[in-house]
Picture (tube, rainbow, N blue to C red):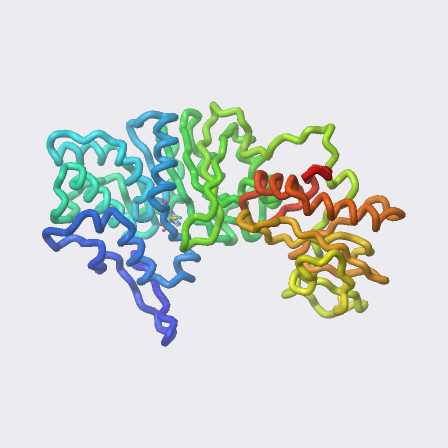
Length: 432
Ligand SMILES: C[S@@+](CC[C@H](N)C(=O)[O-])C[C@H]1O[C@@H](n2cnc3c(N)ncnc32)[C@H](O)[C@@H]1O
């Protein structure tokens, strides 16, 4: 399969075949330096040749060696080297390469290639990527045999790494003891019927749920996934669905995927023997009072690109108009809006907040004579006790600014968006 690439300068469509790329050393040249095939050079070339919007729409972001190695090691320490392992979205083979670094080699390269070919399975919708994965695995085998400059040509090695669509082949995954996956992350509408969501969803969730619906009871699945699946309120039903299939798994947060993909990720080793739950947030101590005891937490209701400019004039605040470090703010601008509005005083927090931010919650108290329309990039905290609303807002702002809250948010949320549930459970504590 060729990847279609749109040339931004003239709008013409060009077709890119990775097979023609000299950087992969494929397959004619003799004396190829194999370390160039094993390091990040193929991915670098891929990024040059395939436009970012196409990479995004196909989810072709490949796992960096350190993350691949950590997750491979964790998988192997749980399952041992299994008779076969499959990456159903193999890309350029980075996960299988990390796995193969742990495979034994034989005295003859042909025997090593034959053994590895039995163990390593994979598929990708893109034929060029599947071929690149096979070439790189062959390069690794040669390299480990000390054949560091060699001819790279596929002569039938790695027959189980094929071109294929995950959704057409998912039933075949039932037979694997170990699955190693980093699925595409893009948001899309899927043709799959989902019991846990509708509309646009992260394809990573669609791939994972489909996979877990089909694997056998003894399969272990090591998955690299976007953090939003672990802690986003939108994915609560998805997590419940995974748990209802009998799976559980711990998780490790890894922060940003890499310098080319600005998305926070975690890894998880899922199996039906694991009873730790599906990425359950730390359990709440019911003695501990939390924000939702005193405040109703809502998400702003104005979605700017959908606003119809109809209805009564309302005071309006958005993430850009509310000053960041202010104690309080009185809205100056107005919009016409028919949806839900909020009576002041109340507190707002920006929903975007990264783990690298010094302060993740920067509260501002909003004053206004009339009801206020609030953009959906803001979290709204409405005091339940309206009579003492203002003093409760001041007290909550102190809680929201203190170090304990920042630590709580960092522990709970590695992704960039504060969710309603996480804000509701912020401990009500004045101690720093
Ligand atoms: C995030 S990349 C991961 C690649 C590799 N496993 C890694 O970790 O570096 C996801 C891969 O899935 C492939 N892919 C997308 N849709 C697919 C499908 N329906 N079936 C199989 N592969 C698919 C993409 O071409 C891409 O190579």
